[in-house]
Image (cartoon, rainbow, N blue to C red):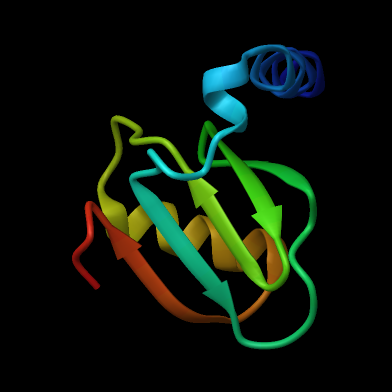
Length: 86
């Protein structure tokens, strides 16, 4: 069931032009090493990757938790900000 929900979230995000834009993102993460995946779902947040960065819209969770779950999913994060604050 969780895989189905994750797949639905990714498909809806891909279908939405607003979700594909990174300029209005709330969360921003820079990976410590390597390239970011194109799209990843973590902590019910759909992240969009480019180069070594990931951006995502605001979620109803604490920023520290969003960052920690993302790090568990993709690896070390060099920089993380929520709403423009590190």
